[in-house]
Length: 95
Image (cartoon, rainbow, N blue to C red; front, top):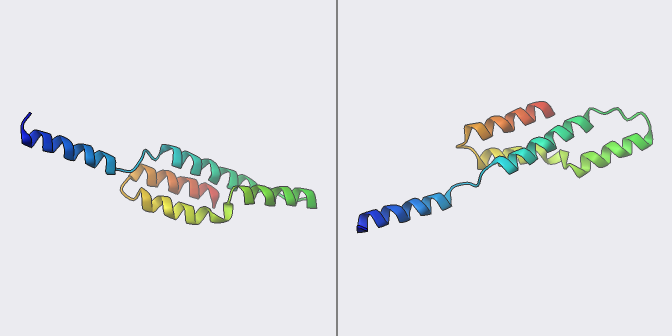
């Protein structure tokens, strides 16, 4: 194998390691969380028990941090238009 080919293969391998991981698991989890936050955020608290249940679900889902987490994901996947579109769609359903 020529030295040039070996160098090219090494650089390709290094470049592959430097790329972001597949966004699918992170985005799927974020989408599910945004959907859950939208659901619980739209629930009616007709009594104290129901209000507590809603607050607990919103707290468990960290719904108050959803905007910040969307921003972090957008920054992480700023060069992936498909990922950015999924984040925007999830947030549109939440708001």
